[in-house]
Image 1 (cartoon, rainbow, N blue to C red):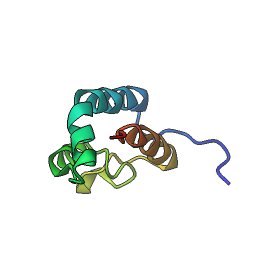
Image 2 (cartoon, helix red, strand yellow; image 1 turned 90 degrees about the vertical axis):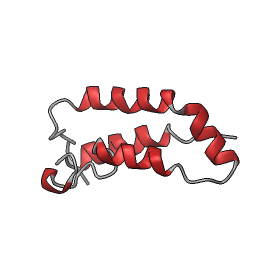
Image 3 (cartoon, helix red, strand yellow; image 1 turned 135 degrees about the vertical axis):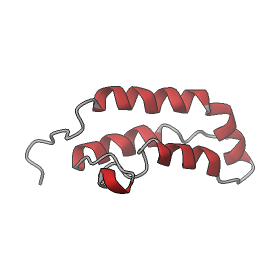
Amino acid sequence: MYDGLNFLVADWANEIIRIQTFATEHEEELRLCERNCIFPIEIYKEMGRRGWIGPFASKDIGGLGGGVAEYCAAQQARGRLRTTA
């Protein structure tokens, strides 16, 4: 379907590291939210401020301005934010 996913955001590899670091820093809070069935709104808002919620949304509306490759990488990294109770 996609014949070679190319990153449009130049520093995307470091962005993935930042997402993983963020997940590690908030691991306990995320675990508690999941255990208590609470949506982590403040964490989600911060992810949005950093452009991680809309990786292929244009920069003028708060996204990263990326493409399919950024979307896939963000989904994978975001999946690591999910912790089991």
